[in-house]
Amino acid sequence: MPGKGPVIVITGTPGTGKSTHAQMLAQESPVPLNHINVGDLVKEKNLYEEYDPDWESYTVDEDKLLDELEPIVAEGGIILDWHTCEIFPERWPDLVIVLRCDHSKLWERLEKRSVESFFPRTLVSHLFPDRNYPLKKIQENNEAEIMQVVLEEARSSYPNEIVIELNSESTEDLESNITRIVQWISNWQQDHST
Image: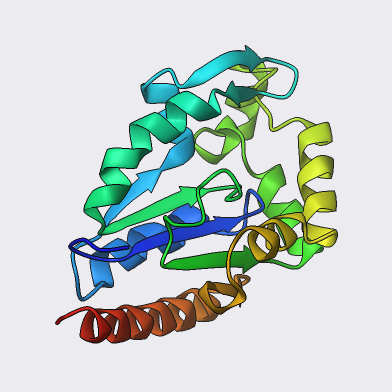
């Protein structure tokens, strides 16, 4: 897609490191890239139909979301960070990165997703007794990772040559992945400089 920089989608099951990768990539990219956490955008701009308190998640209004993103994507130079990718039109991304993680490590990461990561456990249990990441949500996301749901969505939605699967289990993986993506961006920049 023409513009000032590539459109990169970083996707994967919740807990695979999408936002960490996107933030680091935005800092290290040889071209300016704007990181858009799509989940945050949905909440900030009210791009949802309803909130489900049992699952602690929003039902996204896909039309509103795509209308909001269309002019941003047209400019290029962005990283779309979200747990799914098939909603985005095939013409949008130049690269789709699917982050993968061993399901047992993913389970551990998702268990830590609660306010306990910000406050001592004893304080949390008294002040926020219902603020833990729900077990059913951990189970659902873990099953999705085992079944390669996000990877299959990406492969069925975009040309194979733009979809890459990267392991995301360690700091070493993160650094290696960023190096690889930065190299891809440099190549993209050379190919689009004329």
